[in-house]
Amino acid sequence: MLDYLLNALITLFVTIDPIGLAPIFVGLTRGMSRDQRRQIAIRATVTATIILYAFAVVGEGLLTSLGISLAAFRIAGGLMLFWIAFEMVFERRDQRKMANAQKALDGEIVPDHADIHHLAIFPLAIPLIAGPGAISATILIAASAPSTLGLVGLLVIVAALIGSCLLVFLLAGPLDRLLGNTGRIVLTRLLGVLLSALAVQFVADGVTEIARAAMHVG
Image 1 (tube, rainbow, N blue to C red):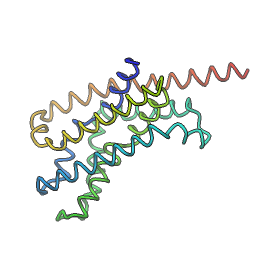
Image 2: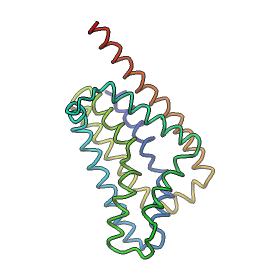
Image 3: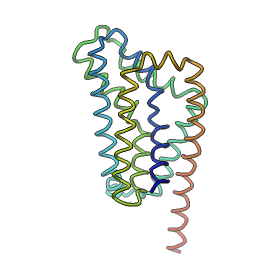
Image 4: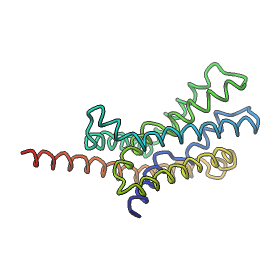
């Protein structure tokens, strides 16, 4: 159980990357008041929590209903996570995130109540917090839960990590200045290497499961 929870914590922490969201949040909310930033931060994190909880609980059943085996999804999810790790190591992930953020800002000059709702959902909640990588990792980890208690532990970890996103958003300005550009680069690359190893493990587990099934059928 401890190994399962530790793996879940590391995988989701690296995939969601709360610290890496700080400079993006600062850029998205530039010119807004502290209250507006707080509203955006709360709405975005609550939305992302609901999304990841939904996939953790019904994700495996959804795959089954679509005729997708868990082994196949492990391979696909592992490849997706590996691509994210590749982007992190070679400094491409931040560029992609900033591009998504810029799409939300194009044509918007004066932030109002509608903008707060818009920015909280896109791009903050989706895809910056609960993106394809985080959703895939959540489904894979939930499907591997050793028991109901393990699934509950996963939900607690998801809540804690997204809570850390909320804290990062509220402290985004000072945190971004503290890390600096060099600190962000070093941290991102280290986490990218770790995520790549976890992604390869997902793929290996999927291939092994398919091979065993084929041998059993044969």
